[in-house]
Length: 227
Image (tube, rainbow, N blue to C red; front, side, top):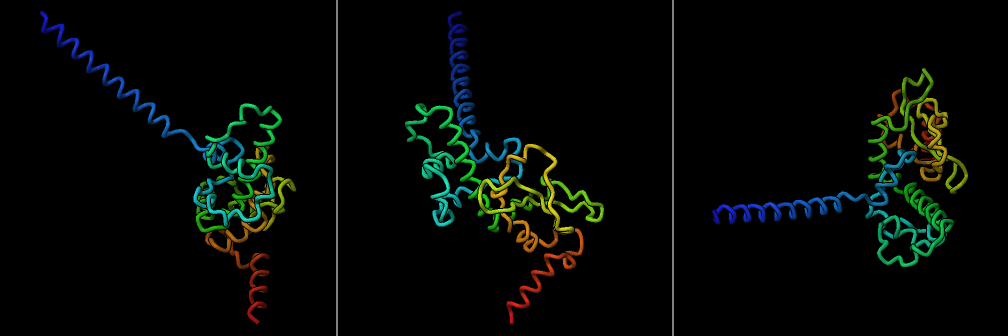
């Protein structure tokens, strides 16, 4: 009889130990699954056009040259993007207006970094994947045969206008059908990305892109440059 109770006690101890291990594994997996600021931002509704900028790109100061004067508290804002918030002691003391200001500054800095990143090989590859997944939509004109659109900014300066969508066939621009994208600043993509992207990936045009106005202008400029 004593052996039965001993065995039951041993079994219960084993179960308790297993539960502790499982709970520790669950807490560990929760920590591992915790999203970074960049992941959370890019997956938020309305931010589908953004790609996730590689952390190594952001940590290279050369890539951020000239951005220090674009936002207040530049270093603190950059730490938020990189999730380096352990040393922030004044977060609890800030009021709601300061929090909103800091949030706007973070989005602005990330957007300006994003505009540079998508001009790199890695950035263009990520945007190509998004285009292949039809995340930017298609040109509404019948003659463009469902040509995929690309995000475009009409200016490099922040606050000059929302992102628009560019068609590589008719070379016209369109507003996104989603109201959420009206809050996406065009400077996060810039005025040159779409054109350089189509030069890098000409196969992404469904029509004869050599007949497009942009190609003809580029070809003429390149010919004159060689003289």
